[in-house]
Length: 238
Image 1 (spheres, one colour):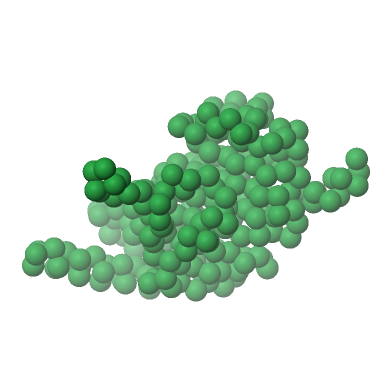
Image 2 (cartoon, helix red, strand yellow):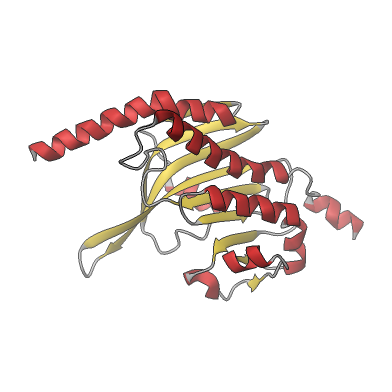
């Protein structure tokens, strides 16, 4: 017990040190303004609003390190979450940690779509799969939407490259959702707190640069939504 307490204290001290030397500088390096609330967390309501199709089988949410930020006039919500599932038969809990980011851009999208790594949820029957013609993208992701043609208005070749770049920079599986009302949400399956580096990562400057690069790649996706024609304009053209 003493060893566990000392380990927890050391981990807390390291996190606090990183917060001032790496995490906050990284946030300030990519956002116009950012407030890190270490003891605050994203709520279940926050998670549900992201519509990331990542939490349907989970019973409750835990987390920490809530960040409220502004990026080029857009309000951004960011944080670490653990999506928990209770197995009542075995009386145990399992969870998967993720970094989640969401914001609302200045216009709606023609149709909602969810971009997920190819895997277990490929067989969802509610949506039609979309083929973009980009071999690298199609091999890596499954795109679920109600209208393939409308989805490709958002998922342009440049947007595909931005998403691939963010996925390549991410420490885990990468997810993106575009909602009809203009919300864009992203998640990285980290398996650990996104703001805490690996145990052998002692270079604070390297931690800052790595975190900043990951966030910048994600925000490149937000930037790429600007050239996309709003849903209303698309309807008027038709």
